[in-house]
Length: 236
Image (cartoon, rainbow, N blue to C red; front, top):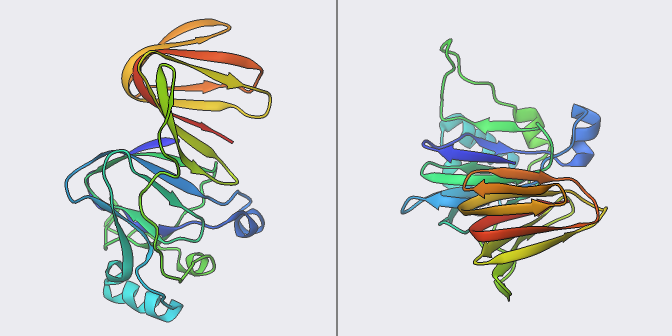
């Protein structure tokens, strides 16, 4: 999990899946999602292609600097959720603050970097052979919408942001309290988006405020969150 504060457009990338990454990189593939914390007016991300394309066209557009022209543009605002499956060409653009939840993996293949140079004056390397071995060339129609609607509970409300083979992510808004019932199957990762409160476990209470994250190991317990706060909860 990470915060990404994009003040400039980031490189255009693609990630492999497990089937490719494990034998070729000795690492897991990378499926990820972006929860939009803040977005300037007109902000957007790229997610896949606007229409079906081919390897030859993508290669040509990388050469002439027009790759972004055929990418699917997804407008985003605070509270949106964008799922990025392995194999999907994608990029974060300027003016967004994102909470990213991903598989534990370092596999990223850079397709295009707008000619940026490193400190020595050399352009950052691209990973075209590996990128093309993993790329989905079909058109994308994805939008930045959470999977679920808000569910009203006593002292809180929640909605499902994303669910896949690798993680589930929930959005919580607490006005009084919520009890998080855990078991032995998975840990919980909790990131406070706004507000403040307390997190109570069998070992005591901890103060929590915006920007902080908490890792809750797997185990049979009830974790109580009290206060007025907004947090994102992830688990496998």
